[in-house]
Amino acid sequence: MRLDYLTIFPDFFGPLELSLPGKAAASGLLDVHVHDLRTWTHDRHRTVDDTPYGGGAGMVMKPEPFGEAFEALGIGAGDTIVFTTPSGERFDQRLAEELATRERIVFACGRYEGIDQRVIDHAREVAEVRELSLGDYVLNGGEVAALAVTEAVVRLLPGFMGNAESLVEESHGASGLLEYPVYTKPRTWQGREVPDVLLSGDHGRIAAWREDQARRRTARRRPDLLHPSVLDDGTPIVRAVPGDAGELLTLQRACWVQEALDNDTLDIPALHESLDDVVAWMQEWDTWVVRRAGRLVGAVRGKMEGDAWDIGRIMVAPDLQGSGLGRALLDHIQAVAPEQATSYLLFTGEGSARNRRMYRKAGFRLRADLPAPPHAVVLTKPRR
Ligand code: ADE
Image 1 (cartoon, rainbow, N blue to C red):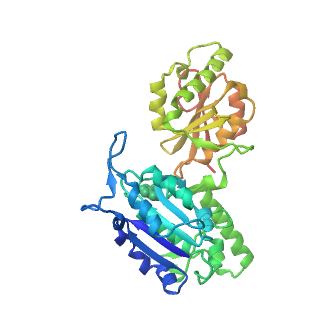
Image 2 (spheres, rainbow, N blue to C red):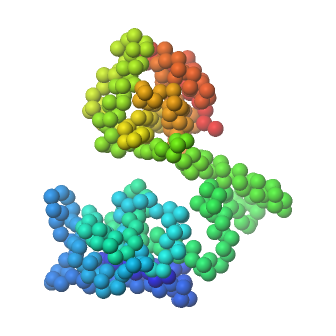
């Protein structure tokens, strides 16, 4: 596999010579080339960035150096260009496996506010393009991300790992679970023992113990891996974005008008919230939404309250109530509770019999001992 890096900080890629990819390069499995993007500048200052059209903060990477670099490096059909950017698709083990099948990957590392969009559009015409993000945080540039992607991909190349079996059982491997805890000698360390089962020599029991540990660990740390956030028909439940506020307000009004009619009262605070109120609570709550045919038809939110995961605003468009969407939202918000949550907590209208039935079925119990707002009740459920 050939790897090219286009960067204004070639020194960032020094570690490639030290670490595992370095060994692969020495053995001929990898052919690594690091390029200083400023090679393809022509002014005295070797400028690679400029101010954004349309205004705004920061600088944008200019198109010409990238364009010339692609040409000079002979990039063409069959090659893959990876742009590392926080606005890319999330890089994961599946993508690493896919990229490990490529002959040549060119990493274009962005800095500042990003790369002129025409570079990416142009790249798509000459090669396969992937825009990849390491995760939901912002690095100063794409170099560290390019190194991380490299390491994840290269270790999957046939002949790279001494022990191919270690690829099978690791986290994010075929099982879909996080890896179980591992131990080595000495048997006792600082008064802590290795679990007996691992010393039993009983391979069946050891495998069962490891599977159980992997499951528990995954449920606690990454419940999203156990409960993919999709409805039965494949519709995704996704995190709300600020632009959803208006539709959330509409959905909220639709839901609580229904509630008001059912209970013959207008004394429902959520019915009287403004767009500003919704924008404000969205900043505080982890909010998830469902769209059907583009329309926002369901939502739910959660936030930590002491040790409890406070669940609220389970909203389903009135025409879809009774379809199971509310229960799916309830299951989802429990599944995404942070690891430290030890219980779930929710408030519901005293008179909303249907909701109370759904919560009861889902394992929530009435807590008359806890304070509740007027006309509401508190329900809790311990976390498994
Ligand atoms: N560049 C800056 N932040 C990044 C991120 N999260 N992933 C990939 N490239 C980045």
